[in-house]
Image (cartoon, rainbow, N blue to C red; front, top):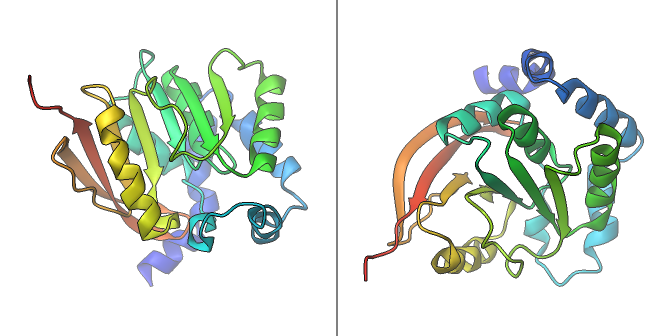
Length: 216
């Protein structure tokens, strides 16, 4: 019952974060306007037919702002970082990262309508210097500029999670990898924290790793 109540009251829990982070209320207002008449399930169904990806990769779920702020604090994200959100959806994690931490933030999303609307919001807020949107498969896109990876693995198929893990070798030493809903197991990923946090679909474990390549 406690988890159900937490989900039902999630919108009220968002307001402290929305007002605490400068500019975030504008993001939320524009997201509300642009998505007022768009049903996520129908939007996803309409676009995913054009891709060969498994249906499991397109389950919808947002990261709440309050949870995002907790994650960013625990991962010690700052102005010097470049955060990549893989499968960024509507872009809430990308927006809050740039606004709260002053970092560069990149949303990688395969469904083009999400990025189209996110780009419009970015231009309206004048944040083109900090926010970037890539319409691509995150299993194939360039990740070498990332210092932080955010992956909401709960919404992906098991095969997709395994294929992404193969890309650890490409990441720079010290890159932080935040994994929601799935414990990553790779010899070059060093776990430094784990927390249970609230998401739009319920509570999930969140694992925090650092990339550590073996010394030559």
